[in-house]
Length: 257
Ligand SMILES: Nc1ncnc2c1ncn2[C@@H]1O[C@H](COP(=O)(O)OP(=O)(O)OP(=O)(O)O)[C@@H](O)[C@H]1O
Image 1 (cartoon, rainbow, N blue to C red):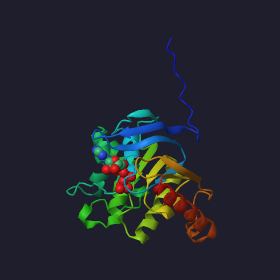
Image 2 (cartoon, rainbow, N blue to C red):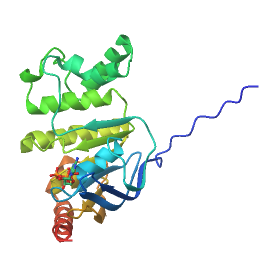
Image 3 (spheres, rainbow, N blue to C red):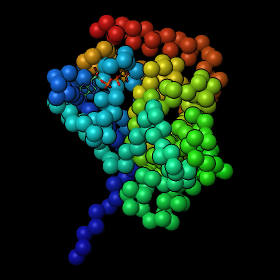
Image 4 (cartoon, protein in one colour):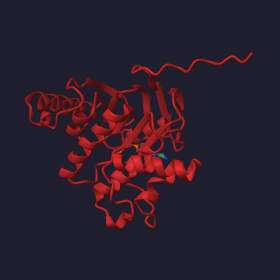
């Protein structure tokens, strides 16, 4: 008699990433991270801020499997991991449609399957009508949306963002922050986001983590109390400004730690 396992229930509380006492020492002896405890559940959007070189990208590299922790336990409970970098990393000779299909193609998804996924992702990021445009015909914000759409075709449960909007102007960045929050509301992935902007961190996140200078340690964590979906007007409130101030203060304190 065949025994079929019931499908694991997917609840909001599913832990997607669980780092315990993680340390990473690069082969040249640089200790990039030390004693990092970090957890991301489904439906959580966790942002990490910290001084330059404190190991933020290293955290994401471990989460995506590009690096292995030298010490501690770095558990990732899904193989559907999306990764968006600061650079959109599009192939210049491919148009929006075929750039978005690339990851699905590398996963050997059928043509019909990847077409359908790409169409849905392009629609979600608001690029319908631009499918035949080449990267050089797009603005920086549109290139980044193409990159986002490409990761969305993998249906990520855990979405890693390495300063994706750092190179964009303020208005485009704010616009894409709102687009990303819409995606988060639609897909309810677990997000781990790196940024140098404290106000972006507070606006996007359910939790903000502050890291010290190298070797990176977590020195503070702030729950963001503002409800999702987030009202863009929140940016102009005293409560928002106060939390941005608190996080900035912790960042300055941690800098010297
Ligand atoms: N492959 C590597 N070999 C040796 N050292 C490395 C390697 N990659 C990164 N480092 C060092 O590890 C430290 C952490 O790097 P990482 O890129 O994770 O920092 P970061 O916080 O993301 O920096 P930034 O904010 O400037 O992007 C830095 O001092 C960096 O020089």
